[in-house]
Length: 362
Image 1 (tube, rainbow, N blue to C red):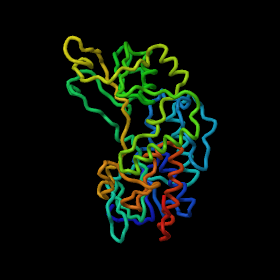
Image 2: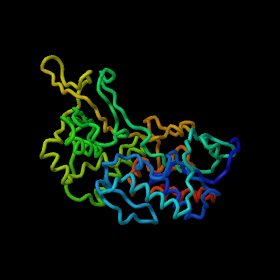
Image 3: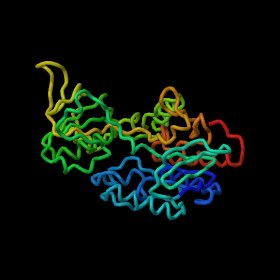
Image 4: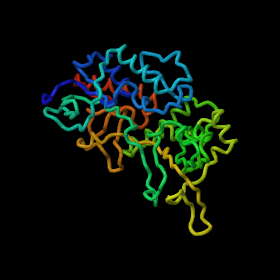
């Protein structure tokens, strides 16, 4: 397909942030397919949720916030979250006529003619006056590098490849990572594995009691400060601490969540701390890296948006270096409720941009 199709705006990604942005663009009066288009690389609805492991049931999900305009009610807490949220997103797209195009891979976004952006995709070229980037992080799992990693004779996998605890039956498993995924993996794997060892770079911080609005605002402010300074964002979850649920309390009591400091090297048969005969060793068949994800922004590289600190400086949702580009689900808006708010803010500013109105300060 050689034709370049013109629209007012392109939304890249149809997860929580992308659908929220598309919903609010429609509420401003823009018409899906005629005025804006939503492109999603996934095979079906559900965003990153559709790839979650089956053992992560909906009842275990923390902080899932409904999309704007349609509540998620009556979901069975024992069903896999991937199924529940996939079906919910599918209903949402149909209810608001968002007509998501998929699977479409965005290769690059470049400067086009007449002040427009040129979006190069597997479905051809699109020309737009504004862009909502909602590509999330699932496509960029972070794999730390440690000495000896290539020598390990066992299996190494990342959370993105985790399918459930049964595959670890009878194996010695080292879980790396102090976030919610790491603790969930440990609690699920422990009953099946021959042994589990939990290692993290920093001591985990467990949060007791409710996480109120004031604490939430403080956590978001910490992430937002990094984004304003052009630094790579940390996730909101990384500064909120781990909720001290009944399952986590039991894991602590049973010794499953017995955190060890980060090992110094990987050997063919496991991991090691220290040197010489006094160094500690743990034998392992599997190393599971629950080490998080990084924003998937490589397609924006031709626009030169990154700051010397390595991140994209954002005011509100607007990229400071190019106010036509809005990042939703990035940095402080990476939570589900944050993505909803960011989608609304991006749509509001894009409406002003299209009307050639001056943008208010963020």
